[in-house]
Length: 307
Ligand SMILES: [Zn+2]
Image (spheres, rainbow, N blue to C red):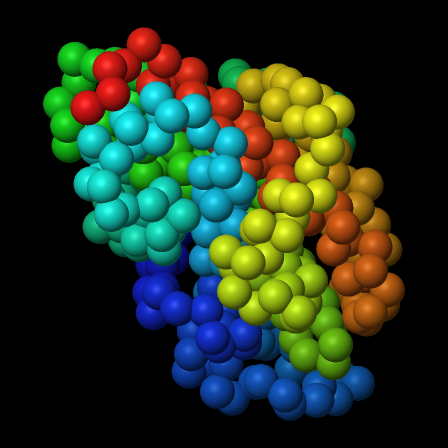
């Protein structure tokens, strides 16, 4: 379902404990609290954990910032004409806009993810994408709207913001899978560094934050990731389309995110080893998302006169 109201967060990055998966009221009660061995409380809390919606705010800013570094001058001019010269797609108000408007734009609720069954080996539009839309078909749709020079300014601005956000979302592995009706890990409760968490939240926020510890500013962190991208990776990463990217994310979810996380009620606790194993995979997906977003934006603005 993933249909609970989205939460708003201030657009700054100095509070590393901020979460998309927990309301501040819950966080105040839970941060730093050690969980007793008895999991009865954990199960109770699991019912109370609100749904998360995609990479956390940092993740979307990181993806957009990497993309920005790979834009053609034509795409840069096109974006400036739509958003204004001072605006950047890596701004929180742009990269996370789709999450912020979600409570008011009910039609967009299913657009942030696609539930590919755990046992499937690829994305199947008929099976996986509901009539209301999913992240795969919305990426294609908004890329077409953005490229349509006859579409109104406001329509194209929205298409740009949706596209920036959804290309990020489709690279979050747990946005492309469902195991035992767990809504992409939202209902997969685990003990993570002694605290009750859900797997989706760990991938939205916590993995990235733990990788960012030396670079708490997402822009600086994105620039660091961007510097690591080789020419071979640029060529390789930019291949495919939204459907194949969803397939890649689904594989990463199966083989990495859910690895060591059994469906049994009592699960082994996750900590340093999980972060060490999954963190580089998450970083790799952020890099891919950034390069792929850049390619989509460069294509959308092809042939558009600089203004
Ligand atoms: Zn989202």
